[in-house]
Image (cartoon, rainbow, N blue to C red; front, top):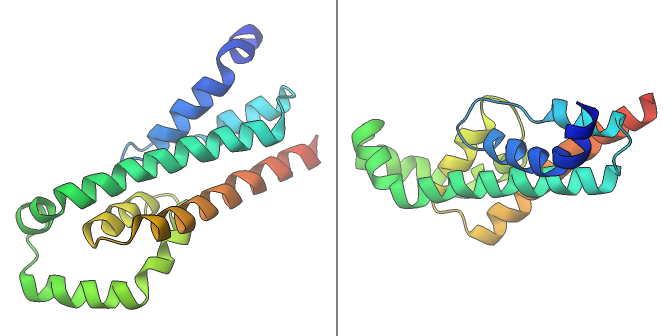
Length: 147
């Protein structure tokens, strides 16, 4: 196990973090903690986890962006008036909710909605990336302090 973590730890963390930020219901925090307990560089591990998780969120955003009309009309069955109302509300206040994209259960749908409602990619990236970096940095800090 030790050899496996040394050889494949960071690539595995990247892949798991990526998948955890799509609609696949898995977590990546446990692997970050494990790697830190095995004395991997905290800054590098946090960076790898953050980039993987952010890219996964970008994938979910892209699904919302390009699959939005199908999702809204066919899957969610939302009419045009309701969509316009949601778009106005989200445009005014909702994009800040992307800071919470790191939360379990609601985080991935927030990224999907960001794509569906066409939040500008730069804003999306800054909000989502900040939230995900803060989460992984906090987990790393707690882990390193506890060692």
